[in-house]
Image (cartoon, rainbow, N blue to C red):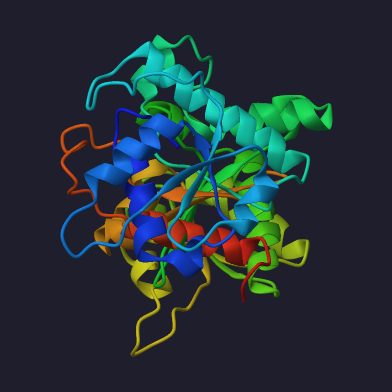
Length: 338
């Protein structure tokens, strides 16, 4: 369900209302009262009714009529939290829903997990030890597998119809992100990308690698990370049979990888060295179409490419396009659609 004070419940309701075939077999791990408030928020003249039904098990979602939102009650029932306010109560509800869904996915009780936005400050206010979905899901997966978190490496991929990017580091400072550009981290990212994107494409992906420095270091004139770290990682990946090329200048590699109606991209995916380097190009093409996919987990997890949008929560104005794409991609990755 995501943070109940944000736009998550509203965009979930819009997916069930506007894409009933896509939402068939889906259900919400969350709170009935919150989803009923969201359904009422998007009702109006000319809009189909969106009923909300309490279900006792995931299996019951398969018997729901179109546009009905099945909800498995995860949080204690009560009055919905206020819109647009950071609170530990909302953070705990959101975290509890993610933990339940992660455990259900790990036990193969559900086919895939699509997460509505969390609020990091609300998680912290609830005493949650993890800053977001990715870290929480990684910890749950490690516990389920009997491994340490370090033994379950994950990476973020942001994707739309035109471009895919995978990041070497995620939510760290820029200084820490530069320090994270090590041979082991880059090579591990290439391996995860090769395996995960390859599984989705049913073939070995063509991977382009962005440099860290301007002009990919210009042969060491603008920094030696490309020469000393990134190029050796690429060579090791190629030696292991991966289709990897680079490092390329960061200001042009994304254009080369972009697929348009006029031309196919040179690469299936670009590995970027840090968060903003990889996400700005995808988001510039349209936040409404971007999907966040966590690679490396023993489960399928996607999410929309935006946050809780507290400033418009409760207004009915939130756009559900990115969540719709996240559901579509989750179904594809889970093998439910081609």
